[in-house]
Image (tube, rainbow, N blue to C red; front, side, top):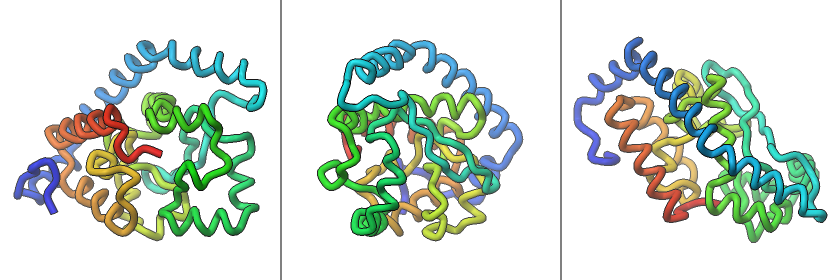
Length: 222
């Protein structure tokens, strides 16, 4: 399957993705873009914090950090604006019917099925504002601007593990550009593998624009 009219020379493009020049330039881009984004979007951090403070029914930390698996299997805490009640992850694992539904639905729950999501959290998720703190992960080097979406440990069984962990995960990926949460496993894993095989500068740019288009349309976000 081809995405964004990507070309036929798969092996050649794959070689580029492994080159030191590509990786070095990609890291420079990550640092510059994430630094600029955190400066420009800093008012959003303040606004979300204020709303969090005045919302007496849902007091808790501004940021939520979930353990994801990154390059070479290294685990890291991926940041998001908190969109759920405090201790949401523990409550998910304790509620066996809810956890079973979560696994069956590709390790996600729709807002209407998830009692853990706050009212404000639904807006954060639908608008993708909850993802903004991941620029911190990009700046730190845990993630790249473009790459396969970082997964939790349980999801690794859906992938070719060694191949997925051979690249740095990204805030924006081919799966999100194509359809985000509307696309489940195994198709999601296949799409992410396409990116690993064909990663190059032009493909990265197309993926960024595809992601931004879906974000503005609110497509596949929950």
